[in-house]
Length: 117
Image 1 (tube, helix red, strand yellow):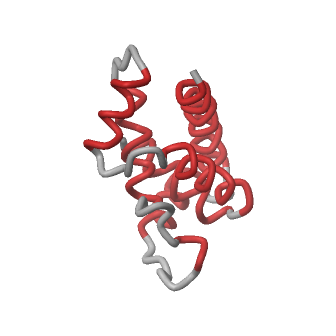
Image 2 (image 1 turned 180 degrees about the vertical axis):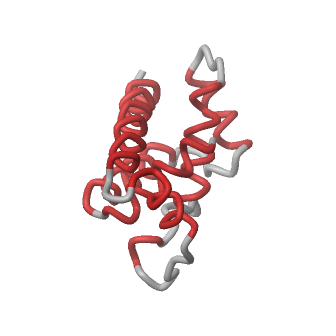
């Protein structure tokens, strides 16, 4: 149950993040341009969490929103097929959500990448 509860909360947050990016000064176009800018991979805010980059996290969460995964076992198997190490999804999800909460750049990039899904 925890996996799905956290996933639903993450999807709700994604919608809010995308909306915030669209309403930011300069609108959605500026946010999209910002999301395309290269990032300094030496900055710890962009460091992968358990091997999952922000770009991969956005791709996974967007795809997961479209999946019909009826059981936690199905979700875990699907996550593993996407490159998520067994037993690490909660840490990955919590880590990226926490970074989005403290970094406008991470939040904006995630929102745009998620919307592209």
